[in-house]
Length: 410
Ligand code: SF4
Ligand code: SF4
Image (tube, rainbow, N blue to C red; front, side, top):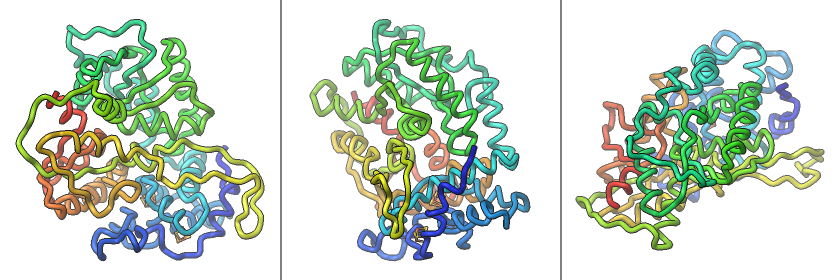
């Protein structure tokens, strides 16, 4: 059951400083590209921000605000990107994103979950993927020549996005084969990772799916799960750990590839036209991928947590591997955007089902920032960021998937 009371300390600790809307001033490159909360950028009201959402959580907890009249749409337009959380934690020790997630769980339990997320959950239940497409076709893109390493204890988890974009999964297979990594696919046993469920507060369904997927890994003797998708990576690493400890290691394909390149087991043999690119950190590979650390105890005056609490501040997301790969590709020059790593600006994909216009504008804002670096292309490795960033008439920019880019040059 959702318990907003657990986050009362966070609600009461907010001093309205506004840091959750901005990157830290020493990291600013001027005024432009210094705001960090996409809903605040778009709507311009405090209610649309981490600060506003925890104020709303307090009113809901106290019964002075009820769902309805658009409150739940406001709550779910927030992309749960966590940028407010890491920036608030620069100045305060409190749990901004976890309060927002608890409010979502409360909203779900009170029957106010928006229809778009209800529908996704139904799709996962009936077809085991977020789109509601036939489960039988999950691996229909696999070439006839593909063979599993039957004895492997490593699985390549392709994710639901493979229905729309099989290319990154094919590229991951090529990279793993070229690097001599033994692995297998889970075929009909692979179901959705459940990211949408726990990120939208549908925790009961999420817990059941997490437990089912853990059993499947066990049944297939899997000790390491390599994900071809950034969303699945963040889900296994940071989401599953909300429902108990993982008994398997989680790696993203870029981490495996960077290691193969560094240790000489993978060699780039082809070149391509010289190009300046910029890299977009997907939230779920980056700041949101830090494993969840449970804490229970007493909070004394001045925020003294007993026992001592370990804080997740976003620094331990995966930032190096994708950049190492880009730096190893001949002809590719990497230019950083002003908002990068744990301060990357969200692409807006997560709110596409709730407010498509906001989602589009947020992606355009990220492309505007990418263009400001003088880059010819924006590179990333998340299928949802791809959907968001590559389609748009405002500030159009070529989008390249990092896994595909590397595979093409082997
Ligand atoms: S940064 Fe934290 S303390 Fe400051 S306004 Fe935002 S939520 Fe409140
Ligand atoms: S999670 Fe992202 S969109 Fe939601 S309030 Fe925080 S910064 Fe804004």
